[in-house]
Amino acid sequence: MAVILIQSIYAVMFLLSKAAFDNGINNFIFVFYRQALATVFLAPFAFFLERKTAPPLSFLTMCKIFFLSLFGITGSLDVYGIALIYTSPTLASATTNCLPAITFFLALLLRIEVLKVKTAAGGAKMVGVVACLCGAATLAFYKGPHFQLSGYHQLIHQSHHLQPSSSSSSWIKGCFLMLLSNFLFGIWLVLQGFVVKGYPSKLRLTTLQCLCSSIQSFCIAYGLERNIEQWKLSWNVSLIAVLYCGIMVTGVTYYIQTWVIEKKGPVFLAMSTPLAFIITLLSSAILLRQIVTLGSILGGVLLVIGLYSVLWGKTREEMPKVTDDLELGSEHHPPPPQSQST
Image (cartoon, rainbow, N blue to C red; front, side, top):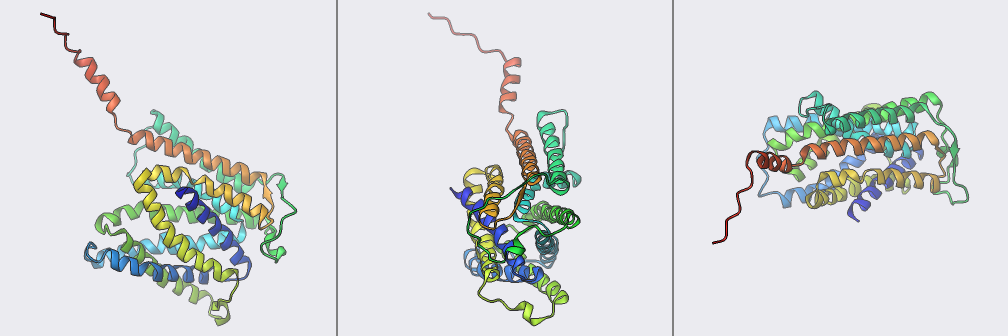
């Protein structure tokens, strides 16, 4: 139930973000408001829950957190917003399935991971990376037949925004920007492991990253958009998206994910990622009345195959070699002879 809730929260994030951008909010301003609200929401918990256990924050660690936030959060979210304007929530949720493959590839370049192609685990990882590449290419270059569910009430009444109005070149550009966003987020996942070793207070680390990202995204947004009218939030879907992403996604989901990882491990959480794709695909077709293409479905399936292949190979490598040790021990040490009855 927890992982279903997590993936449902992410699916709603994809839909609300797309609806907010279609409603006219500036992408860079949206990222600033989202990160600022997340900082305000997390700061009291970080201060009170970790005030006795948090280690002192050095200048070097703060610099690492700043640059980690710049690439992994600010850069990733800004590029993601531009890509979502060009594409659809379905594509955004589908490309998240290639994160394990991207993270593994980056860890391989940094020599954190080792690829043994001749083993079953190494072969599975290689198949996963290739499947993710094929899935990304399918999403970008193949559309195929169109499917649309009719007879449902439209959630957003500006229907001209909800139809795929972008050209083929804009769609391809959006696909590559979405992959770039996931690539930056993958860098954040890999490098964050080094920062956590020096500053293990995870809640304060998350809050500090949100704070740095708020400052960075404000500078970027103010540099690109100085019209005060664009900064005003009214009671519409844009305000709902900001509140939802800042509180539910960054705040609530963080705790639920930590609880799931503690109970079932990170692989169990990663295995549930395709749920967000399925929920977003159906919701986009039913609520937003968006056209779903065969290419999006096939590309998403290939990305899911790649996800599970990389996860299976990673799990296989991390399994303790108890069985092998027992087999070797039985070969070199025969069983003791049975005692004779007196």
